[in-house]
Length: 125
Image (tube, rainbow, N blue to C red; front, side):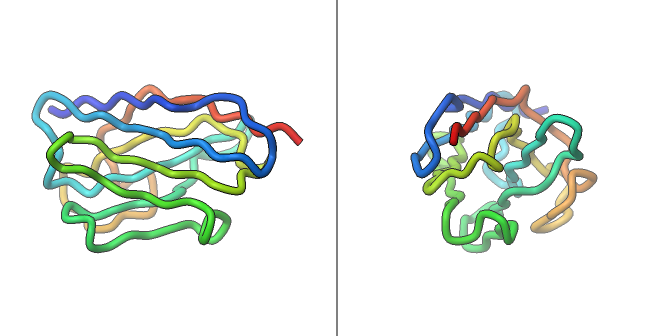
């Protein structure tokens, strides 16, 4: 089993930047596809970005393309989400997730079996 811990969330003004971190421990997921999801109040959890085990393939939701960048450092067992040009609609709890069952570059929450506890991102207008 791999455990995931997110950090880096906070309060930022619109147009600002934040970098989220997802640290993996336990049976480390260096060979797992990793994803970032977010969930705003009253809304379903949605994919933000995903990255395959080697970092050679990524996916971004249309709403964050060109603003967010997902990356990973296998040596540090860490996945990052660099968020630039933040908007109030980016406000949500952001979750890191791991696919240990090898669904491929999954874009739905059903394709991920391990989740972190989440980190709050709030963007003020």
